[in-house]
Amino acid sequence: MPIAEKTYTFRASEDLDPRAREALSTLSLLLEEDAGALDQAMAVFWITVLRHARDFEQTENQSALFRTTLETFVEAAEKLARDREHLREYEQWAAEDEEGRAMRVAALKAAGARWDE
Image (cartoon, rainbow, N blue to C red; front, side, top):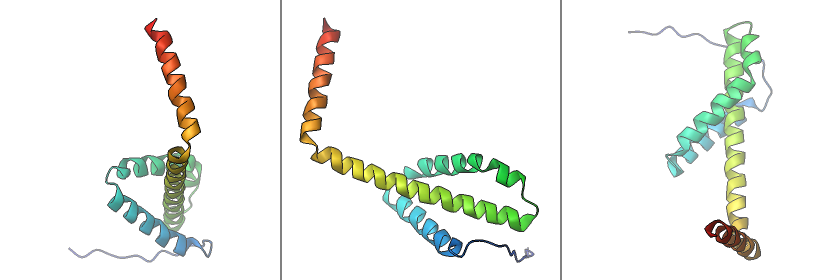
């Protein structure tokens, strides 16, 4: 069954196209690395949608709705990429932080000893 096509035009920042391409690439790579990341990606996306609910309500036409949806998708993908990078940095720091690890282990042992009493 043939599908009618429609061309959408809208104003957007000049960097939206490369940002959208990067967002798609980021999500593709993320899902290849970690199949469980889909849940996190969906959660970030829906939180971003809720954050922009007013923008969706104020769209005047289909082009504005498409632009808002695309911008929301890009923002969510960028946030997900930042979160994953921060997680990697934290994991690296935690692995190198011997003194901090020793303090945490000692604190947990001390707390555990109190609970045993």
